[in-house]
Image (tube, rainbow, N blue to C red; front, side, top):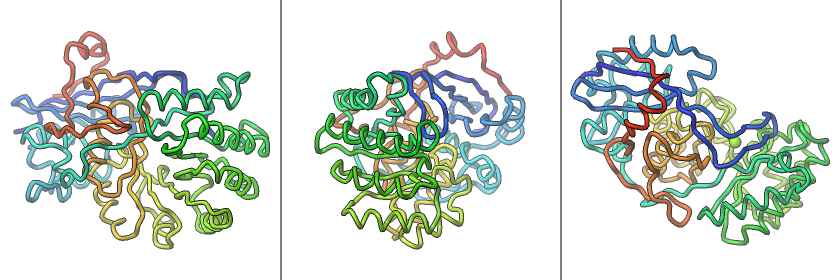
Length: 393
Ligand SMILES: [Mg+2]
């Protein structure tokens, strides 16, 4: 079984609402593209991934060149090293390819799985849970979209997430980092968090992400932590830039106010696990590590998971910006990963990959179909997106 054809196609992935700013970037808007990469064998099996990492500053022309030079002609059984049904690493000829372009390793799992009738979950080590919890990650600075409602707007959207079946959500904070005066931003952050807790009630996990919005304002971060202890925040993400002294100070703040919040970060780590993050792990200063599920890819994430084993630090991949594909990829990873906490869910409308697995009690049911469980809706693909499909063979 050889890969004989590959293609790239930009497919818009739509949110259910407009997403506002975070601490450093302006409005996300209504949709983002998924740069869908498909690879097919001569006997009709297919593997899929998205090349969003590559296309952040890459060109379609270069992407096609990469697919032509590196994928076309590869034997499916050369893609991955597999022992007793579980992937142990890259294949002999693919280790450099997957090191340079880790997002392609997910296509390898999908294609290998589809052609051997085995699930990506199995290839990742086997199922450790029947459902993968997910959190609504769409609570951006929604108060800036509807200024007259302010924090109430975010609380209303939180109530909607609960009504839609979610049992966890993440709130963007750090308004004082750029878009408000620092102290006013902290106060709004507090108001939003307390309002959301009131809207969702107890037995509901609240995560908070500041995208480094409290850098240079440790005093205000301490105010934020103190004022939100009653909201029982499950994790605090990127409140400040990763740094040993800063994280030590944050641990002390949490202890001072009796907070049990976990400290998590790592989505900006492009070469995991790089030194500062390794220091934070070794010193016990973080509780969760978050390189992106697609950018880092499955092979790297398996490596990370092994490296974190025994440290108490949980594997919680970042997934924002990966569209509907990221949901499928992260369900597979979460299903097979012991310390996984919750899937970052953009709640995109499903499109070419078909419906998502059943969502029940705030979690996706693990279905264990071959590969990632994706079957591209070819009619939809051809009628809507194929005009932008670029192929190599
Ligand atoms: Mg984040």
